[in-house]
Length: 89
Image (cartoon, rainbow, N blue to C red; front, side, top):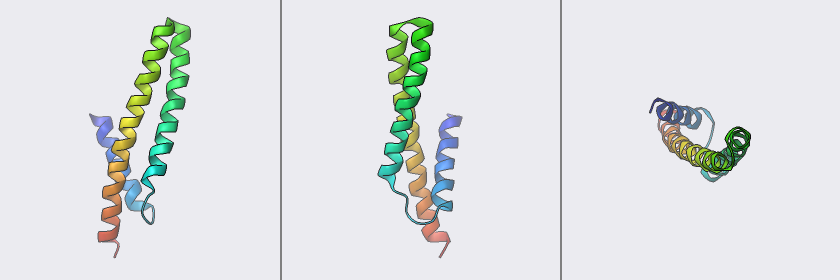
């Protein structure tokens, strides 16, 4: 729960501080790419420690978790962009 809030606040700050509207699709693609890479790395580590079952569970789990955090971050950037347009005029 705390990490979710920190990711959201980071998104708000990122949306507010960076000039202009953020490209949400670009952020989503970058987040999913990071999720896949992280899932593969930790999946391979778990494969060598515990076998094939742990590889699949870890790979899918990391991709889903990173995707959720990416969506939370993008929601924060939407609010940050809104605050930027309202407060920086």
